[in-house]
Figure: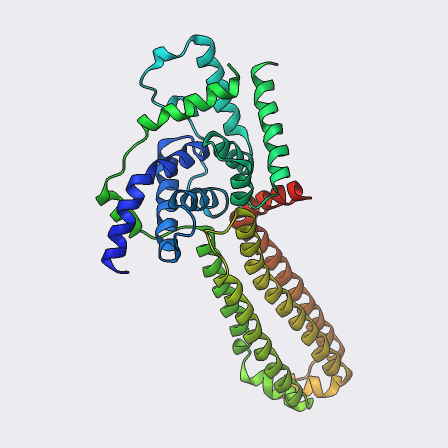
Length: 164
Length: 212
């Protein structure tokens, strides 16, 4: 494929790479799987790039392919059980910002998110990314009403975990 | 503050700690090979298409001579022509379905398309199994209705053998081979599905139940 396109893709991707890292954080729990999924999403984005027409925003397009790769296309290369918890992977800089209860709550919530199904992870991810229900329903291919219902269930589930 | 707001705030905070992959590393990445399930499905499907359409090339010519003695040659020729037409139709559908897989589609549609592509190959395999079983039955019925010709054909040197016993053994061997073949196929499909499609099917079902 031509060099110009390649350069354009890498520059644009580099600017928006946070989206892909965040998808990896929701779907993987150790650094190696994170890198593995990151690479697969990058390859998928590059393969789809020549067909990207720009009728949607690049970020929207990246959310879609990122989630599709994580939910549908990605085959875990290892079957090993993750040894590290999600919250320990998050290297927080300012841990003083959190009081103990909050820290504890966050730990529990990230743990709970990791136990969700692939689809539910996708929903909570888009919610955390401030996407509205119409965008969520378009990304996953479900109706807006169903997205809302499902999201409320996940929220309730997370809250019950925190306040049993 | 609501617990979920705390989560959201924390989620936004992590932006600063996310890794930054360099231009060169991204360049290296996009030149690596994908290992997505779509690629695996494509490879396995092509192998299956080749395997099943190549299978009847393995039948030795001497068999065709035997069939000739039962006047089955034209019948076999016609079935073979029909078979190749069907193969071409299957390949056409498979190619179309495969081409329609688009990773920037919504998740539901993407999964639907992958499953449809894989299903085309499954139908192709079912079709082959049915044709093989049917053909074996037809050929056996014709041959066993003329036991003398059959013994003649299989025993050209006219060795002294017990005709009935010989035919019984032949029938049992054929049935056992068929059962073993079908057993191996079932095992193979369980493994293929277990490895490739279990997670996909599970996710697809979850989305489907949400939409119902």
